[in-house]
Length: 189
Length: 78
Image (cartoon, rainbow over all chains, first blue to last red; front, side, top):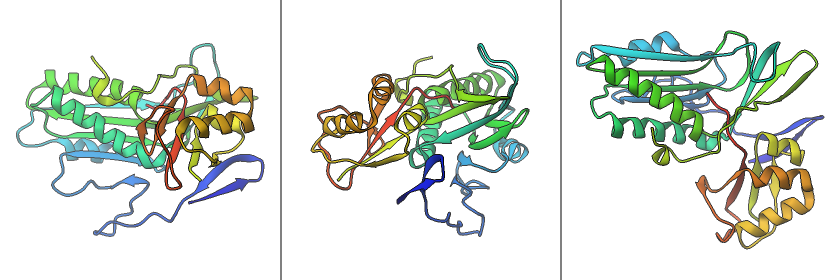
């Protein structure tokens, strides 16, 4: 790993080129698109637009009668700030997907009937209305699917090392609504 | 020397994504970073989580050349 200077922009850590998986699919950032064959948890951090429809299609199993999809999208305001035009997400790359996997694990221990779980997060710069995060949860019945999806997004927001910066005309700053970082196993409902 | 990585507001305060600092434990690395980066960084550090190799750590944790200490301000993913 080499630390490089970015000509006045914040320093970036230079990383190695991303490898491809066995099927030739690019390992876009961390995680795989599509997910590992046979797996029931799909976690992904990527700079590419999120595969929402693919995640929904992947999550439905014959044993599941309910699938809930939550998408977080870029909004034009936050507390005390109007006119937001873009968000920029950064993450602690090496530990973001393991922490997403921990969120999925916490959901499975709380909701043992779950079928499949997808937790997908985009990083980099996003414009208004773009999807920043996707949670998909499938289960035999809707109560668990809804509850698990809510648990997943709430836990993700408190446990995954990702930070967002809000940009507006004439300025930018880190999101003021931020959570002290916890472990997924410590987050209670 | 162990590597210190800083994120979000900590990165802004430090003016860098991270660098190596001497130290036998997490506390020494953090103290060296505060010495170099100043009180603004120290303020952010006070409200940040600290990880060693991806796990929560205390100042007393020993560190070596292959270790990575990270300063993680309150998160805002999702």
